[in-house]
Structure formats: structure tokens, C-alpha cells
Length: 389
Image (cartoon, rainbow, N blue to C red; front, side, top):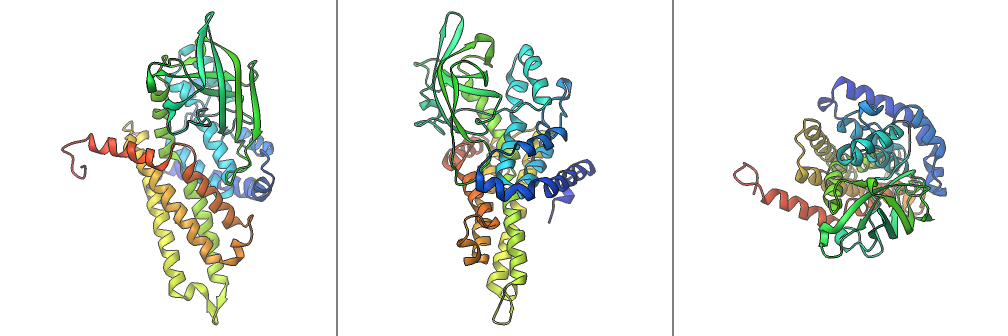
């Protein structure tokens, strides 16, 4: 099933174009990417030529200037082919937005045309050994010295830090200001003192370029500060709410798992009939289909709000949290349909989808309870609206 009624003819045409490209180019490479964990440079070149690496880059700076619904469509179709590649492309799609929203005009002119031409970037380099969802616990420091910021610290396993040419790095620039002492900087990969550490041997999203970066007396010009000093967490959270709303990667992964399980249930026979004819299996597939449609509907509702200029942070986080939960349940049920056929094979397509879904549910954007806190604050701050607490 597909969200035909919620999509314009232009959106459907875009989705179908991406779907054909994924079936032709991405699906045949998915198993190899997962097994080797190598970054798929060949696919990057294909999608760069198609103008699909940075579709949110504003048109006035040379980009396609597409909307957030298109971003969700892109992410879902890509994830159907490869979770790791979808993770990278979604990250790269949002890379220009930190500057587009909060950068100076000089920063926009310097960086946005590069993204439009296919430069690779990350969204946020935040996570550290002792800091992730709790961004205020960040230990990476930024000290203003001789007119430049000097950064020191380590960032753990952001995507695609292994290959990113432009990076957003967050650092504590004031020890006395708590969460208000975090600032955001844009860095070039070849900046002296910045080095890339080992690639993560991750459970899921393999091939996404997850890696560590180390900062040793990295000198950053003052003009590379994004937004105002101390506004880093606010800048980050605003972007991550939007990323959450468009993150239909779990939907694509779960749709793939469901399709494989449905096909298997029609072909596999027990007691003289296909297992889909057994009510328990059929009901399980029905539950999967319902969860998929509910998750997809929430994602597209959230995207429609952003496209209409009515972004709701609570709804964005609701869409992401529900989608992660529902799609992970679909993946688990799909594995149950296959039984030993998939449980005994780490690289089975359904097992791969489940690993990616588990990584999505526990990965970027903050822990689940952090998301619930954001949703709660958004809901309980609103009064007098029907359906609101």
C-alpha cells in the first residue's frame, strides 16, 4: 500500500523516479554494503548526478529547493533498498539546513553552493563518550584565543564523519552557563588538528560512514560560528525536530521486511497449505500492515505541517517515536514469519532490516525517553485545545 491520497502528482512522480533508481542501482549493492561496511562511493556518484544528494538546498544557492515531503519520500524509498545508504543520504540532505536557517549570508554563499554541487556533510557532531542525549554534559571545549576559536575533544560515531567534507561540531564555550554554553561551528575536513578515527563496526546502518573524529587544538575562525555563541543546543534541537518528522527510513525498512514476509508466507507450506492460510500468521501480517500505514500517515502529516509553515515540534517527535516503535515491531514480526530461515543468517534481508530498525530506534535524535519528554512539554504547554491535555 502507498500514500497515494496524500501525495500530489509531482510527489508521486518524484517517488516513482527514486523507486526506479533504487531498484536498479541500490538494491543490487545492499548485501555487499552490509557485509563489508564499506562506504558506497559508486552510489554517491550516481545520486550526485541525479541531483538527489542535497534536495533541500535552497534554489537561490543552486540547489533543488525541494520540500520536506519529498525528503520523506526519498528516505523511505532508499531505505527499502539499503538502510545504510538511506541513513547517509538523509543526513546529507539535511546538512545544508543548519547554515540555511542560522548561517550568515557570507556562510550561505560560501557553503550552500558546495552542497548543491554534491559536497558531503554531516548534520551534527555531538555524541561523546559521556554525552549524547544529555548535550549539556559535553566535554569538547571551545576557547577564544587570539581572535580564533580553539577546539579540543572527541566526537563518537556520527554519520558520515568518515567521509564528510563539511562538518558541524558542537563545543562547550562557557563553563558557567550550563546548556546555554554550547556553541556550533562549521569545519572543513582538512582543518589542521582534525583527524578521523576508526569506522564504527555497527549493528545496523552499515556503510553509512559512521566514524569518530578527534579535535586537537583545532583553530576555527570566528566567522565559522553558526548562530550566536551559546545557542548551539537550540540550533541543534530545532533542526533535529525537522529531521525527526521526515525520517521515514524505518518505514522503508519495515515495508521491505513486510513484503519479504508476505512473499514467504505465500510460498512456505505447512500441513498441506501456505502458512498465510493459518490464521495466526495471517493476523500477524495484518497487524504489520496496520502499523506500517499508521507510521507512514504520521510522517506525512508532520511533513505537511512543516511544508505549510506550521511545524509542531511535539508532532514531529511523535511521528518519529511512533514510527520507530511501530516499524521495529513490524521487523520483529517479519523475522518470526521466517523463523529459522532468517534467524540463522545474520545477512538475510529480513535480519538486515531488523538490525537497521534496531539501530534507528536507539540511534540519532536522542534516546526514546528524551523524545517523550519533548513531546510531553509540547503537549502540556498547550491549553484549551480539543484533544490536548
